[in-house]
Every structure is written in structure tokens, then in C-alpha cells.
Image (tube, rainbow, N blue to C red; front, side):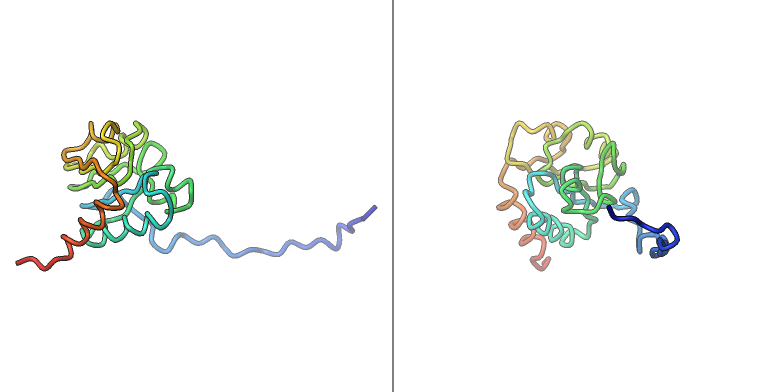
Length: 149
């Protein structure tokens, strides 16, 4: 049976605790594009990030996206995340669970993109696009990137 001599046990100090480089304060964002479970995977999140970049917006997420590790928890909006009140909130692939809606209820204008026309998010949306986000979002990005003239 193995024996351990307590005198031989040493504790090596780990790295000292450091704050995150930049804490994400979504409450200050004027525009937010949020990813929901409908984005399917980390690759779908990249599409949301591209739309956010085209809009000059912050990226946020619903809980399933953070739970899956596709975006960090600091980007979560909802009852177990941050509450936000942007001028524009674009919900991409978000069904509209009440836990998420409470976090975005201060939003001035809500645009929802979801393939399910019966998704509860449309009840909270000012503008709704019932369609496949993998078709709708690239089309929006393309339009937003066109030179304004």
C-alpha cells in the first residue's frame, strides 16, 4: 500500500488571480447582436460576430450558447447573465425563453431572426424575420458592407 510522507508534500503557489483583460459590460452597448441555440455551433457564432462587426455592435448570447462554450459567460444576457438596454438588439436564432427576455427587455428596437415563425421571440420583437439564419445573416452582412451612396 503506497504511503505518503506529509513532510514531502509541498504546495506550489499557482498564478495569482488576475481580473479579465477587459470585463464585458454589455449594459453600456448601443447595439447588440445576440446568438442563440439556433446558431448550432461555434461556426454559427462566427456569423453572428461578422454581423455584429458590420453593425458596430457588441456580441451577446443566450444561456445555451455560453453553456456550450461557444461564447464566454460574460456575454450572456438574461436572468442568469447581464441585463441590457441597447438602441438595437438583434436576436439571431434565439427562441425567446422568458429567462432571456428579462435580460433584454430594456432594448429600444428588437429585430428577431428565427426559422420558427411561432417562436416566442417574435412577441418581443419590433421586426421579425422568419427564415434560416444561415441564409438571412450572410445577406444582411452583404448589404451592410455595401458602400453607402
